[in-house]
Amino acid sequence: MTKLIAVVGPTGTGKSDTAIGVAKHIESLGQKAEIVNADSMQFYRGMNIGTAKLSEFERQGVEHHLLDWLDIADESTAAEYQSVARRKILELQEANITPILAGGSMLYLAAALNEFGFAARDETIRAQLEAELLRVGESELYRRLVALTPDTASRIDPKNGRRIVRALEVVSITGDDFAAKLPDLNESWQPVLEIGLNSDRAHLVARLQTRATSMWQRGLVAEVEALIPLGIRDGKTSSRAIGYAQALAQLDGRLTEAEAIEETAKLTSRYARRQMSWFRRDPRINWFDYQDPQATSNILNLVTEHLNA
Image (cartoon, rainbow, N blue to C red; front, top):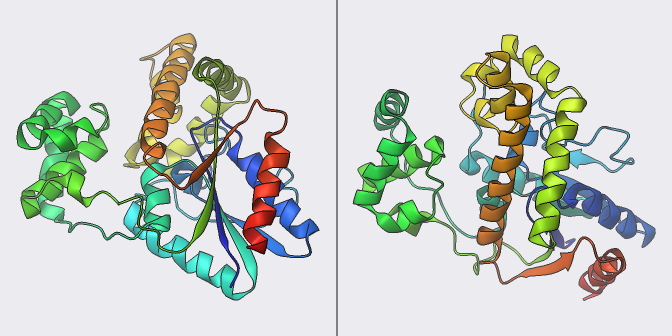
C-alpha cells in the first residue's frame, strides 16, 4: 500500500504549489501521486478566486480530488469529510497511487489524519441555538459558552458563530466539555508524513494583505454576485467564508471596497494565527520556511526518504 503524505500550514504559505511539486517528484521516481483537497472552502463549486483554488492549467496535470464537490448552499462538516476523504485515500492507495492531502482547514485535516469520532447532533437543539445566534449575536452565545465550559471557549474564535453553536449543542446533548471531543493529534489513523509550511509572521501578514487586494482585482465581487442566485446568502458555511462575507457586505453597501479588502486581510491574518496555534500541537509535522531557497529540495529529499523507508 502506498504511503500517505500531507502538506499543511497556515493560509497563504504555498501549500497547493508544494503539493503539486511533491506529486511531480513522486512521478519522476516512477510512481503515481494524486492530491486530496483539505481546504473546506474549496469544496464549493463557484468559489474560486476567494479560496485561491488552482485552475486546471495551474494543476499541471496532477489529478485533484474533493474540489467542487458541494453546491454553494450545502453545509460542510468535518464528520462528512472524514468519511469521504478517507474513502478516497484508501481508494488511491489500493490503486497504488500516493495520496497527498493538502490544505489548511484544521479540523478537517485532523478528521482525516487522526483517530477520533464526532459527538452526537440534535437538529432541534441546533435550530434553537441558530435562531438565538441570529437574535442575540455571537458575543452573547460566546458568553454563555464561557460560563458553561471556559476550556472549550478558550479554543474557539469568539466571532465564529457556527463553532460556538456546535459547542453549545454538544454540551447541551452530552453535558461534556466540547474540548474533550477534539482530536488527539498523537493518535494517527494511519502512518503519515506531514510537511508544514510557514515563515516569519510579518512576511506572511504582508503576503496575505497583497493576496486580499489581488482577490478584488481579479474579480471576487463579480464572482460573489454570480453566486447570489445559487444561494450563497443562505449557505451556512459559504456565506461566512472570509472574503465572501466581505464581498457580500460591499454589494449590500455595508462596506466600501477599501473596507472590505482591509477587513478580509485582517481576518485572514487572524485565521492564519489560529491555524498555527492548532498545528503547533501536532508533533508529526516537519516544518519548512517557504522563504528558504533550500526548502523545496529539502522537502523532496524527505519525501524520497519516506517513500523508501
